Image 1 (cartoon, rainbow, N blue to C red):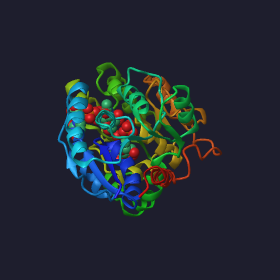
Image 2 (image 1 turned 90 degrees about the vertical axis):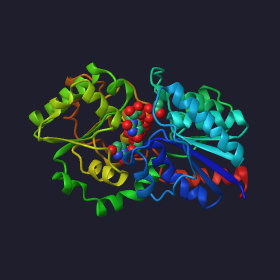
Image 3 (image 1 turned 90 degrees about the horizontal axis):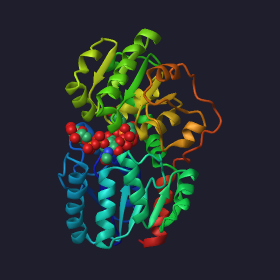
Image 4 (image 1 turned 180 degrees about the horizontal axis):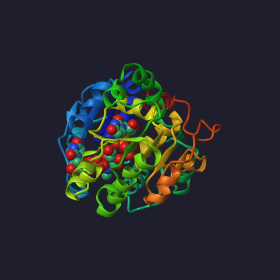
Length: 362
Ligand code: UD1
Ligand code: UDP
């Protein structure tokens, strides 16, 4: 039987794997390698449990560290597994260090790579993700691009692999789970929030979380939201950001009953909270798309985004970290209706699987 290996390791990889696993496993022998980049229960295992993904076949336990350590160890340990499994294809997801390591380990060991979410560019090489996605795209044999802009970026760079416009797998995952979230999640009751009476916040990018000045500006914005807009703030805090809030002495500045600091959430709870939020303030790649799909106005506290189509269509407002700009953007009302199909129709994973069958057989 044809064998496909997926290499994952961090939260956004698991969400994308939730789309691909069922369609790959239906057609091929599917082996999942988890590098161990994310390891806390609520950053890792909860996604496998809640999104019907089987336990990984291999858990490599790489953990945290510098980029050199994390990528290097993940390459070394993944390579060992690839030599044992000898797959027909290795699939990597998005732009994390685990995706980079999976792609490098595979191509160096002589196995073909498919990249889910190929061709995105922020044109900011100070972001580790931009470095990762550029390298992955140039070593991949199959490039699954979510948007026409992504296809265009790949063509301009003359990548060697085959480019396919498939749509975004986040649409597939959201369509499958949003109803379950609505019905089953009790997170709003637990937090005591109601439809549109809160702003949801996620922050974890290195440029925001690791810099005391920048994180301080985020904190100032969050303190201002209840004052100015009479809305609560719900902030599921990434462990990286929690560590920084503590070490920069910023945690106490968020000690306001109108600001709920909670741990990272499982996907279903997160989607429920996002769907009912008045606004979302985020630096996440995944959350920008989910906000667009759910029609929630989204403010991105970065200088650049790789999801330029969402900015151009007016669904995402890019503010950087200037508190005045962020607070002003909160006043922007619901996104314009119209171009509601920027990311495909929710069949990206099926399209990818058909392409894999045509290239690999079954
Ligand atoms: C990684 C990805 C980023 C993605 C994010 C999603 C890279 C370069 N970055 O960033 O693209 O948006 O995941 O969440 O791959 N930590 C824990 N427990 C965990 C995981 C991390 O405490 O389970 C803490 C550790 O202190 C660690 C820090 O978070 O040093 C950062 O983790 P890391 O995986 O290096 O990067 P992320 O910021 O999570
Ligand atoms: N997410 C989640 N719980 C949280 C925060 C995010 O389930 O507390 C989901 C979110 O819906 C998104 C995915 O995790 O689809 C990955 O987002 P993250 O912000 O971690 O990574 P990025 O997309 O920025 O690489």
